[in-house]
Length: 234
Image (cartoon, rainbow, N blue to C red; front, side, top):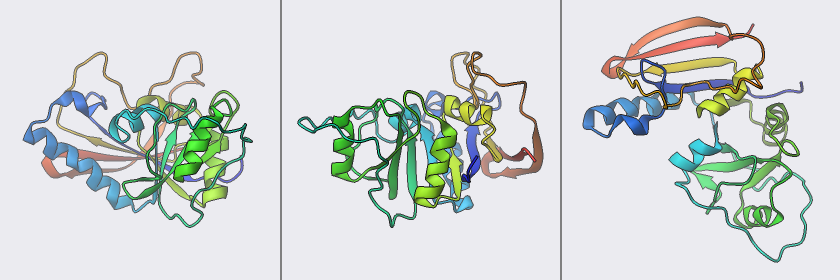
């Protein structure tokens, strides 16, 4: 594999490993616990973060539907760098162009969307018009290794924060692409069978057995939250 960013996965969970905080209510106590994630994120000083399509849609683009610009001719499947001077990045994995975008920034970070070559020409036309960068990483399905190599070579991203959801985390783990894992364990028990966990991998694509981690640090932070730091791989 060519050079890729160093991947740090940061997740916030209940004590039973569940990750969907929307199910935990919005009481003042719950809100005070959820603040820990942003505080932890900021300590890393990493200027690029990546999430899956579902997480981006739910937590950031708020369900905005894709905009298709009609009347455009066929566009070549070449990567598009909208802002070559950008220093921080919000990255979405969106294989089938389901995310809607209104502007090229997310919380001040330049948006990069990772697509397959099957997306509509009219979708690419809109992204170009509003200044959202896009890269292609596979014909029909996303190849994470290709995506990471392009983020490294085209945008100079050397470190990348991976922050869910469970399927995207599972895909990175399955491909051996996570270097560090940080888990904030909140003093909450979820107990829901249907709630997602940190890593979810479909049986038909699962490679080998379990992934071994090496514990590097255990720290108690505010509000009885425990911060675990693991290294993965050599």
